[in-house]
Image 1 (cartoon, rainbow, N blue to C red):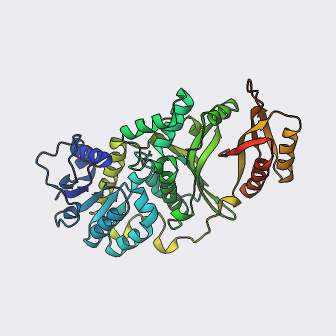
Image 2 (tube, rainbow, N blue to C red; image 1 turned 90 degrees about the vertical axis):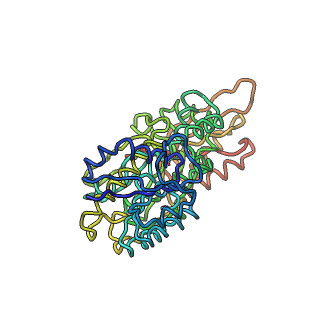
Length: 433
Ligand code: HSE
């Protein structure tokens, strides 16, 4: 059979990993697909020392690749949303299938891109957009398709998890660990996407859409990063038997869908609490299967390239199978997507870890507990520590589940107390039950 011809746009971290896997595993891939997959052309602004491109048709203009009539599948690995969107829409217009690792593009423009792809009868595959090397899209869209998904929760940003792990295990400084993540190729071009939770929010948007059969709604995802987390928070949480992880949570409730990304305390006994370094893991709770957990490298050239190439193989197989019976882009038939509402964060209910600095003086604790009680907040545990040579001491309060709206009101009142210094650090707590 004729070889399948691939054009690669972008030869950065993911592009180089995908290029090298297609080369290194060419024989194994041919055995799987029944025909060879060849790299027809590579479009990149600069060469990458990690790739031997001798004899490869190289171009500096990525649009040469999408306009090359020889190419069947375009790999969009340039990142960003403006040029990448134009590139993908041009490829679709030219009747080419697309494989992308671009979570921002899918989360923010996926609804439009999939509609165009559907009209042209081509596939836009995006396994590598979420959780690097973990086949979570395939798992949710196909392996768990018998289930009504109740919720999912995942560590879906490798950089953030790497930073939290190093802070907790080695007491390292936030900026120092971030620099290392950048050097290792884990971090986004703009690392605020990692530390402010935007990257995880892009990924959660995609997962939720596929899990629940809802359109992509990035703008409704509550997004909070890890930049406010201190080593003191990490140490207190650990004393209480918890780890602080940056989680993406999508939960189907009777009132609507929760879509939220934020630092979260989870019990050290949870498997997710032991997912460390750049590793990602996603827990999915289906009504038939119960809880499942997938784990693997969430970033890096070869793990992410593994997902890109798996998509290329899937698309290559589809070329010779029934085009009218494909797995839908968002797992559910396009005309069967649900318009169930996404809940605002104030409507969400969970436990809270509060860390504040107070004057070590009679009556202060009573005032704080009274405010919590007045707002219907029940305390689960409380720790007050001495701080040598200072009247200002840390107070940590763990609460039972309460609506975020009530917690906001209580925190505003606590922060207004003259004996409370600065702001109250609030971190949500999840049981993942
Ligand atoms: N910056 C991302 C992360 C890369 O750290 O997870 C993979 O999407």
